[in-house]
Length: 96
Ligand SMILES: NC(=O)c1ccc[n+]([C@@H]2O[C@H](COP(=O)([O-])OP(=O)(O)OC[C@H]3O[C@@H](n4cnc5c(N)ncnc54)[C@H](O)[C@@H]3O)[C@@H](O)[C@H]2O)c1
Image (cartoon, rainbow, N blue to C red; front, top):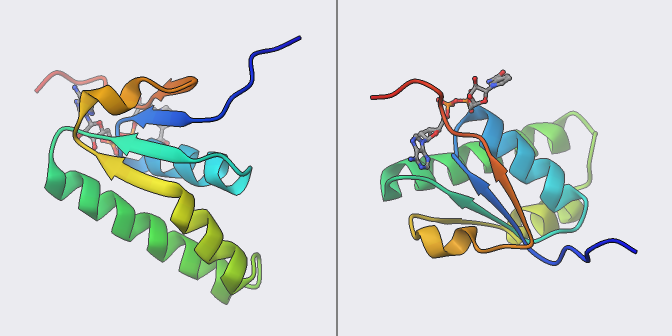
């Protein structure tokens, strides 16, 4: 008997984080993408939307399904959002 996953959080809203968020949301999970500032979070959401639109244009997914996936993805700069059933880390390794 496994643990039931109801919420997913992804730390790091870069290339990997965006892709992981789309995969998890596609599988039906509500996903919160966490990153260090609002600008990065908003950019991530824009890029996620662009990626989904591209998939619709290429006939890989329907427009309503894409909208449902997008609805499941939220962004946040609040570390409290990392208190999810499944947390996936996708943070840059380089210290800045
Ligand atoms: N992109 C790839 O193809 C790829 C493939 C395999 C592994 N990886 C690994 O995955 C990780 C992420 O790669 P990426 O390409 O998404 O990098 P990226 O630079 O696109 O994104 C990294 C994100 O981490 C965020 N970040 C930095 N410090 C943070 C902190 N303290 N808390 C929260 N967010 C923080 C940055 O703001 C940035 O948005 C790296 O470790 C990389 O080596 C990447």
